[in-house]
Length: 285
Ligand code: FDP
Image 1 (cartoon, rainbow, N blue to C red):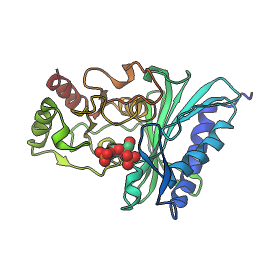
Image 2: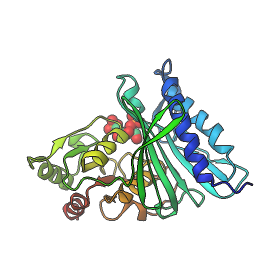
Image 3: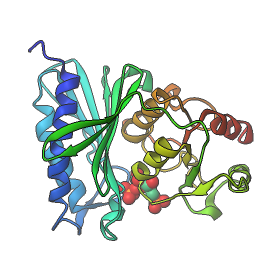
């Protein structure tokens, strides 16, 4: 064991690996002959990015566990301080059409499954025209640009803009419960709001962080827990958006207050400006 802060080491490793992951997508746009623990067909790039991050993160001093949306079993490591949970390639369905994707990470100080209150840091990489990272720790959010292993701060103390501009909602409209559909109509009818939906959660949530607004992947009629995973997506996103002054909700309470029962639990996810999330919770009551 060393005295170095394992959280810093993990974040530095993810940031350095991001440019490599981006380059490694070339030639890995096909499907792998496998499913992830949630029953979704994996892309070759999902499996490859997971293995790359598992190798690098599980060997860092201080890391007790590496867990990923792409593997059923947690990798137990030699130390006992922090657990790293990742979605190695969020939005990998966008590989075929060459649209935005991301990498999401949450760093917990408890073994998984853990509540959001056990997070000590979280963030995401966005593979847009530029590779960027949004990172939350100790209640503040910082944005970086990543190039060839270098990390440059582009904005400190990031907060959601006060006036919400964009909205994006996942799932098929006919599968939305009636109360959620009515809420969406209210959001859409405001002339100050614009639709922004790209099919990769990280791309869509990053628009909310940049312009203000709301993103949701709600409960669906035939899937009351929605689609997104609590440990790998819900908690890390909620932690960052709340650190940026916004709110998160599973429809009733902050996502960070949801009790997990399993590493691969799903959660209805709604994040954005506090007043829009307050209104959502009223609408879903
Ligand atoms: P993907 O399946 O492509 O990895 O978490 C997974 C996710 O993408 C999110 O990034 C995205 O918001 C959502 O699923 C889109 O799902 P559907 O197209 O199945 O609605």
